Amino acid sequence: MAVMNRLIQRCGSVRNLCTKSPETDLRKVSSALSSALDENSKVKGRNVHWVFLGCPGVGKGTYAARLSKLLSVPHISTGDLVRHELDSRGPLSSQLAEIVNQGKLISDEIIIDLLSKRLEDAQAKGETGFILDGFPRTLKQAEILEGVTDIDLVINLKLRVEALIAKCLGRRICSECRGNYNVASIDIKGENGSPRMYMPPLLPPSQCESKLITRSDDTEEVVKERLKIYNELSRPVEEYYRSRGKLLEFDLPGGIPESWSKLLQALNLDDDDDEHKKTAAA
Ligand SMILES: [Zn+2]
Image (cartoon, rainbow, N blue to C red; front, side):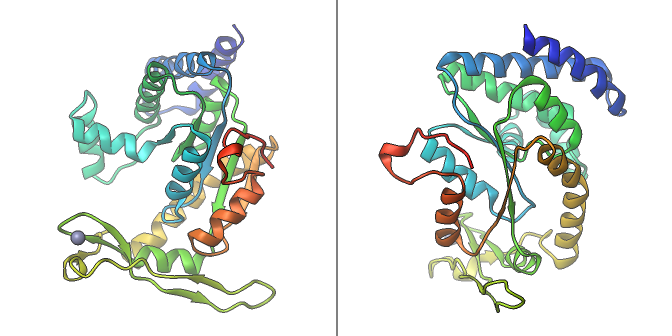
């Protein structure tokens, strides 16, 4: 079968890139991913296979969640999968806790393993298609994914760097109800042909006001370092999809109401019940 042949070839080239883990692990998880994806698309025909790219803090989770609701496909976030595995004390949780506590990057093998399990669940639930958020993060992950399924479209969300940093530094969490808020009021004057950018704060209700905390890693230094690492890893991923004609670059023009309607336009979608199943992409 074509998918398996592609996978076998793919594992050959991935093996050369993989230095940290035994190749058998990668082969095993790639194979699980392949069969999960294969079954996933057989169940009820074909739905969208989309990927969201974008740096931490850009808000890709928000847009991916909205689109998944609009198109009735699962929104699969690898960040959520990791958090869920940690909370559920699943088979990988102690290994994951150690990696996360040491501030290390989670290996491709673990991420693909978690993703394969999620797609197997999707199959059991009769879901078709997906919107991936947080995967692929590296060129190696993109190559593995391309070897096992056809990605239709990769949406690269971008935000002006000064807005992005202000947004990350404005994040607050309520220490009591764990609600997420943002105290940054972003208003960047339009100049050199670029329009004014306005993003209002997302302020907490009065009962949370005195209980707001900042994540310890939301300092300017850490935010800038996170962006640097992201850019280094993602540039080859973007180039990979650009060269295959699958990359849609989308500059967020401002806050959610403004950006959402422009994003739908770019994707040829309408936020209208009759149009839910429309999968045409720009
Ligand atoms: Zn609260």
